[in-house]
Length: 447
Image (tube, rainbow, N blue to C red; front, side):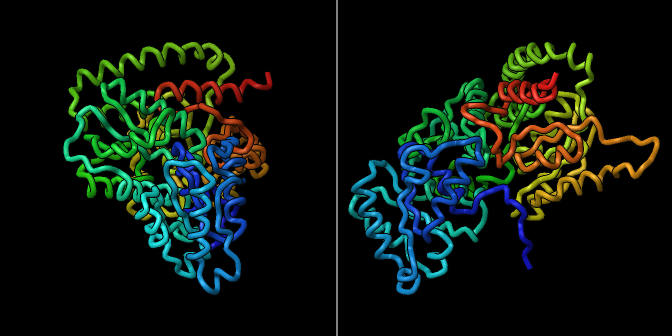
């Protein structure tokens, strides 16, 4: 029997699909679901992602069929057809996607057939089955990419050897997705390539439509967007590589070496790019040396987040900041044993020689339990090696756990309700400087 998830750290597949499409320019999601689904997901999208806002014709302005008893009993395809007609009439968009909720999935409405009627008339209307019970927001993201790659992209037999596509950073679920995509795009551009990120700054649907021209797809994740990459390779004969999400020097150097090698670049050239980035990076970090030593800013660390962020944060804290990441709690709920085995390898080979304890736990209430299991609490002992000073890097949910443990805290992973996020990034060299500012800013805020 399934357990109840205490305060989930993700949306359902429908929510992930809505967030993904809302991040595409002039793409309009059309919800075919029961009344209430859209508004609930819009509130989670906005309030839990650094107040991301609605975007163009999104949020509470999303078109929805709002099916009731009549549609549940007799089917909702006619209601969906009516909603698509009115949406095309009222909302000015370049791409329309019908997304399904749990209720219409259970009654079996053929949304592809309904969308196909409009596509035959020249309207850019597509459909995806995104019932919430199919998976979480990461899966909704992957489903959108799969559909785009199968149905929307133009075929291109000839490939542009200087063009690559990059994805794996999930809009909204990664609260800093837009800034992170900008930074990662810049890192690949420094290797001499043009980059499509689909959901980043100044991206266009036209560039997405011609994405099959690319010579390589780079998925910045071990798990998110991998199935879509397989579809892309099958449909358009473009290979892909999977690289861990990078934060800081040691993670980003690995990222650049892996991507550069796959792109056919020589090691000497990649090393020159990396050394240029390191020079700037450490030029700023060295300014912290005095205060770091004077008031001892080293900390024990607990990292709580998805598989993308947890491995990147742990390596950054250990190898770049010299902290002691004792415990990592990975919150993904749908990982296979194969996925878990791969993710665990990302916590090996630290330059520091450290190896944190890694557990998989989706429950918010499990954080203090896991810390106390890993580091037994003081039971009235006179002399005791306490878990202090400590710092929790996680979501807004970890604020209570941090208070109970006497630890400092920074919200980085979804949900983030206690920060406003615009173009901030934590990826790469540039993002690691911002993360360092935020972490040490939290430590000295009360001085």
